[in-house]
Structure formats: C-alpha cells, structure tokens
Length: 163
Image 1 (cartoon, rainbow, N blue to C red):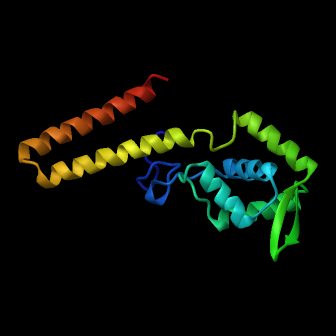
Image 2: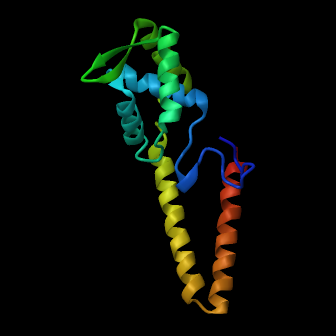
C-alpha cells in the first residue's frame, strides 16, 4: 500500500467507509487461500474473506466472480453444481499455486487484518473525541485539540520515516 493519500484524497488500500481494499494480486491469492481450505461457492468465498479480515474487507461480487472464472479457465479450479449453486474447488495445480503465493507473500493477505482493525478503531475513537471537543469545547480547548491532533499526525509520519 502507498503511504499517503491517493488521487481521491483517500489512503490507497482503504475504500468507502474505511474498509480495506486489496490489490488485484492479493485478491487472487486470497481466493486461492480460501478455496484451498475447502470448496466454496462465490458468496461463501466473499463471506470467508470478510470473516478472515475481521470485517475490514468485504470483497464485491464483481471482484470475486471474475477471479473464480479465471481460475477455472486456467485449470486451477473446477466448478460443479451443488444445490443449485456453482461450487469451486482447487485442482492440484491450484493447490500448488495457492501454497506458492501464500509462501511468497509471507502468509495469507489477511494476516495483518487485526492490526489494521485496531488502528482503525483507535482512529475512530480519536475522531469521536475531537468531534465532541469541536462541538462542546471553548475556543481555547478547540485550539489545544487541533495542536494535539497535528502533533499526533507528525508523530505517525515519523514512525514511517524510521524505515
């Protein structure tokens, strides 16, 4: 992910409502990883990914179904009809690709979801506190709050500068 606002003023990697967005390669790896666990139909893939990312990412059908079809076209998955639903299952080649991609990435794409979720929660609490100071605080209190938030932003960027 980028370390700054993207072209629309949002931080890349986060979509509407602060939900995490995954890059195309991560989505493919994530789909392979959940199918490696067990065969699933498209909606189950979406649900599994939302659960594994602790609700930080809910992929859209428009991002999942084309990948499922592509995996089938590439011989990495096969589908069958079960209870009126198309269920996808990895082939041996698909299992091998899933293993390789997860190893190369150092784990599944959702491995850091808990850390991201806790940071987001802390930011949301900060936002709520700032909103309350802005609504009920005196001019001096609001000015102090602005300074605190400005200092916090600078400290966060210093963390990234340590790399």
